[in-house]
Amino acid sequence: FGLPARAAMITAYLEGWRNVEDHSRAIALEAAPAALGRLADAVEALLASGVYHADLSGKNIFTDGETCAFIDLDACVPGATWTPKRRFKMLVQLYD
Image (tube, rainbow, N blue to C red; front, side, top):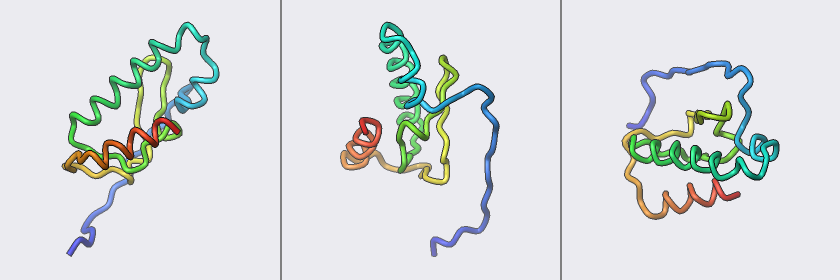
């Protein structure tokens, strides 16, 4: 009936990492295209994995400058169908 039978919390401390919003404000303009490319690759990998992140915003994506990691995983829906509405919502969240 949609009641959870189990729950888990995944935690890791990402030493020296910061969210992509803060990272984008701190890097040189010349580094922005590469940073945006890495972010796009991470989002495409998320799409390919079949997981829908209902709260995908810059504050929920962390980076060390090379790798991106998604946080706030309780907003994730594994095995979700990527409808045009969901894809649009995700892109608007990222834009904001």
